[in-house]
Image (cartoon, rainbow over all chains, first blue to last red; front, side, top):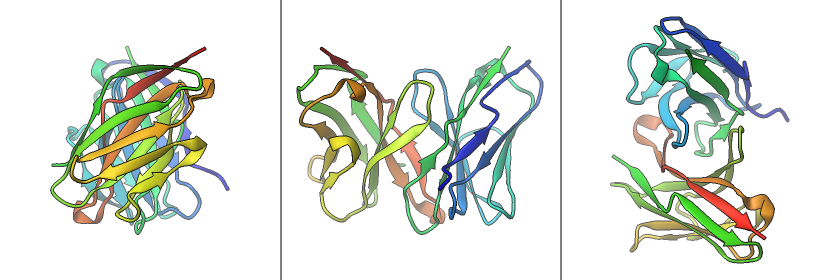
Length: 112
Length: 115
């Protein structure tokens, strides 16, 4: 049973550029959440997708956007990258009727 | 808004000693609480969860946690630490407002296990 997968593993971008991160949920899961984890901190909730719609959103600017596809996979897009966007981006999946979220290994984004 | 506070950003124990990692929560509704572990350069792994059933919750790798409403606490314990337990541990509370299950995490506790 495949767990949550994310791609790419690492990414280096320049300020002002745009980036897309991808996530495939655990088999059978229909809800995908994205978190940002800055160095030395706990993960911060960005948003959650269910039935291809954004259901909840954290305190992140509109530069952060996402999408969920019919197969439940998801993308996180960040526009106009800032140095402060450098972080580990974690994807988590769950079933709507349960609360355990299962996390992927993350994508390490470095903005220079 | 829901929140969790983890007391002690770094905890050091000897191998074989008791592990106690502290977490206090704040919630206006009955909370769902979780402990996750993160090894270096990896994602988060669920250790255990409390979802309003038994107050003493057993998880993987010998860890357990007790929900104490009167103290608004959900501390993580393990009777005997092993070198492989060295990692960062996060307590989290679930916000099920609007049908979602957003997690709010604490700042983490780095556990060091010494010989």
